[in-house]
Image 1 (cartoon, one colour):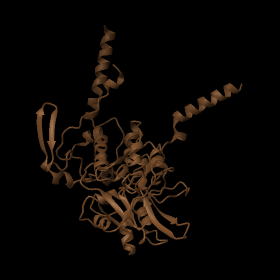
Image 2 (cartoon, rainbow over the protein chains, first blue to last red):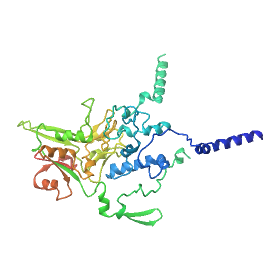
Image 3 (cartoon, rainbow over the protein chains, first blue to last red):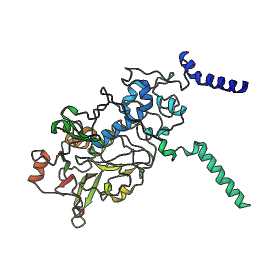
Image 4 (spheres, each protein chain N blue to C red):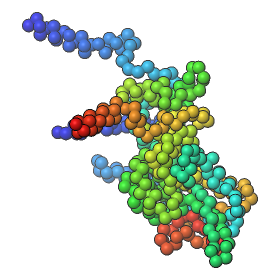
Length: 160
Length: 254
């Protein structure tokens, strides 16, 4: 009985933790860079969850229907969210882990491929390298290395 | 129950401040017949005010006689406008528009002309595309949706004009209005971003600026447009007329 009580009380403590955390201002998540400009009318919570839906919907409208007076274009994100390097003052590209898309997407382990075709900095800035626009980064991915080492092990075992 | 059944795409909540689905909704009439069945009607002016207009068919007329030898103003303008100037292997670089020289073997007479996507009415590239990435807008402009292009290059095989290019290398510093990247196919967009703003394509503007005036851009469906008047007053041909593709790009004095 005592054991059960301990488990239940522990469970409650764990469940209550996020509330306590929120009250104290602490939040589990990536450190976001500060944005300029007016906040999104939909609210930040909405944008965090649905920004991809908005962009996907509006990209089809622009490309397929030629509707260019849209509010959620990728280009517009850069108006407020561009992160600049403190030393040089230049906007950082998607190659840099401080890039505003990467701060969250790295945290949730989601790789977006927008920037293989779209520029990852505001218009006018000369992006130094096209490395962030590689289609596949096979050489650097742990999965690829795993597969590669597996194939190598097969080859060596067949040699024997 | 498969794991897929648990995955539900979130609905977009209504938000009239920004998510105004039909932007030209001023003249839209919605009639709900029964739950789940909705009829929508749009006033002609409101629907055509924004985006591609189904009543138009954009076209180009190129007067080969006026196209000057060694002039590459249209090609340079296109490169600058759409940012496809290549680096790396010149044999792999994209060509949205190129100057083609034709030589009459009997007489030795040489003709030069620009060739780009011919924006066919029945585009073979759209027929063969396995993903629907290659498509024709309602106003006749043929484009590649790079979001769905898988880079199979079937459209490049199908195109009789060799108008499409494949991007082999990673690209940076794209123009915001002309995204392009490794692993996708691209071609002349008839400067769709300019046309949507009521401007003319960059190549036509550059040709006019040189004083040659070899290119005319306009609406083929409008009998009062410059291009329609020109087409009506002197002979012109389509490239590969045997294929019956009815291209939007026409050539005069060829």
